[in-house]
Amino acid sequence: MIDINLIRENPELVKENIKKKHQNEKLPLVDKIKKLDEGWRKLKYDEDGLRSERNKISKDINSAKKNKKDASDLIKKAKEIPGKIEKSQEKRRKLEEEIKELMFKIPNIIHKSVPLGKDDSENKVIKKWGKIPKFSFPVKNHVELLENLGVVDFDTSAKVSGKGFYYLKGDWALLNMALINFAINFMNKKDYLYVEPPLIVKKEICEAAEDFEAFETKLYKIQDEDLYLIPSAEHSILGFLKEKTTPEEKLPVKIFGYSMCFRKEIGSHGIHEKGLWRTHQFNKVEQFIFCKPEDSWKYYEELRKNTEEIMKALNLPYRIFESCSGDLSDWKAKGEDVEVYRPTTKQYEEVMSLSNCTDCQARDLNIRGVNKKGERYVLHTLNNTALATSRIMVAIAENNQQKDGSVKIPKVLWKYMGGKKVIKNEKTK
Image (cartoon, one colour):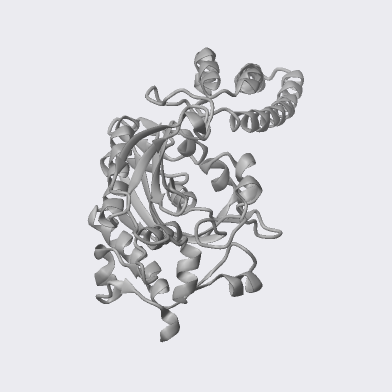
């Protein structure tokens, strides 16, 4: 959530930001939060006054006893004060919960460079790279290609687990591992700390990571537990510094992690067709940075550069698509997607997502830095996909298909595939 001081000191800035995101229905929330916060601060002020009064009465009681005077009225007053403080604290706790619930609905302050727009139709292409492949034969989609090669089984996985799951076999399963190992080695050379994070996190981590109310329907919840399977390693890596204060000289903290990820993908993005593009379970290597506020835009550029280098190494044509204000997720100050070209759909589709969440995520989990003067501040958090294997495998299959139905393996992966350069029909084995 954003800093409540913005609502206390500059509510018009917060309202203007809401208007830029075309969420005018949220404008009344700013005034409501401001009023509730004023009530909260009044209670806090009164509590502090009661504590001061209690201290004064205690001194008066001691003085009265020392001078052998009647202190019964003073003692009676002193006994009443803890109850008054307790009642005030209970009211304040209720206000805190109400304020917190409303604050989660207030979007992060977007960066001045974010293009203004109402929805994804106004997102902007800021870069394109790579040659669109040309084919002298009818192009097949990845499902047809891989089923003909005998390297996947979507029908059996549907019987075993339902739609949105898959069996990878033989060389295609090895290609999945090759992509993971390539991404891990790539990021390791960038001097990021490798982490294999928990696959299950508490609700408070999910709430801090994103708009939980909007995203909850996509999460797999553990029955009778306040726990969720992670939709991305971003969630559990975000929690890595929960309630911790990092000395400034140890910043930034750069992390990358490999994990399985789980999403229900229901509603408008439901699983309507078999294949690897949209699945309930997938493998991903994620980049994450905790840093000083003044450094976050520098690292935003770094995370983009890392992803572009990965796409170029795989020789996959891509474009970078920047989210406009109306399409930008509420917890982000700025965001971009890397989209790969698919010859079967003749369009670019998302494979990686870059975000600068500034201090919005870290504030909720009390993730702070401290300088040499002892001054504490909320860190900024940034994340970007390094590589999600399922969608990259779709792109490899569709862009690298050959007339005989085989698929060329990107050169950078040959060493991870034991020198194999082409995946041929597994049915002949």
